[in-house]
Amino acid sequence: MAKGKAKGQKGKRITLKAAKNSIRITFDGRRRLDLSKMGITTFPKCILKLADVDELDLSRNMLKKIPDSIQKFQKLRWLDLHSNQLEELPEAIGMLQNLVYLNVSNNKLTTKNLPVELNLLKNLRTLNLGLNRLDNIPTTLGALKELKEEEASIFQSPLLQIPRECLSLQGHANHRTL
Image (cartoon, rainbow, N blue to C red; front, side, top):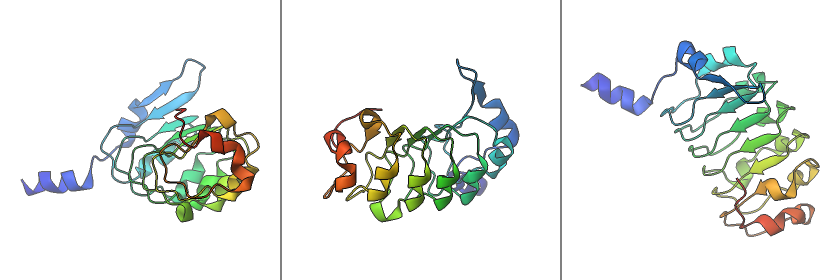
């Protein structure tokens, strides 16, 4: 019985074989690694061997931290981390230069724990920061010129201040887009 309890506390362990079996080809030919809704509590290091995927879905788990090794996913265009327990994002997330979609909604992120390096994601078109603990939008997000106004979502975050650089996002502060 003690073994079962320990497993429950640690969450589900993902093996390389299970991860490989979770890769799907999207309708447009991209490789998508879907590890959503699996009860994962720690980032599975084995998936670093699958870093050539185009899409990574780790949503609806119990992740508290994303390691700097996320930068190994250089081909990544789509990253979904929503509905976890993330309190911060690693600075290395800024190294994902091909990223066009990032969903980190419904976590425990605060403004001070959003890395400045998010401004390096020059190809980012969709960003969802909603349902977090943000008190303002970092002015550095104003550098994301590809970010589509209608696809930037900060819904239901207790925003106190919206920087002038990000005023184009203001109309969407209470709007669900994703």
